[in-house]
Length: 108
Length: 113
Image 1 (cartoon, one colour):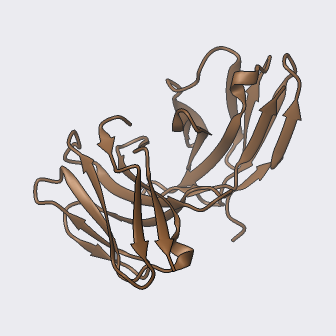
Image 2: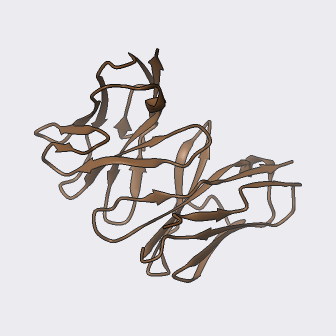
């Protein structure tokens, strides 16, 4: 979805926090924000989602801007296994619009 | 739970041949999605079913593509005739009607020669 934009790539040192940004300026009031990640040769895997409030789970945290036009996925301590392509998406009633994804490289 | 199951995992065929991709969603999920992923275009939604009924097929590239869901536990995506530009990884995903979280299968890697 061209209206969901993410940086093409980011790097992080192992054990450091990572903040992956996403802009979804055309999000509607009922759209959820989902984050997925895709490891090599696998299908996308759910990471976290939210609507308005910040969210935490065992994998990551999601910070949602007050106007909901942007969000940030936070990996608190990057590990080598977190190296993947991270997709931000907005989910409407019947579908899911993926962004182009951010390739995260974790440096040992 | 076995997750979303797709078959075959890999398919190599010649241009003009018919290709059928299969998907078994997670039991209890009432929505099913077919996606195509290429380097050039990323992840594209092809078609979406809700309770076995096609809801949105606007992403289906052309008439050569068709999808069916005869029951809640099975769906097919057919390409006839196939062309080299159809080479891609095709993913199936399913979800319940709650939060919208989709669960993806491992994908079918299709190569049309």
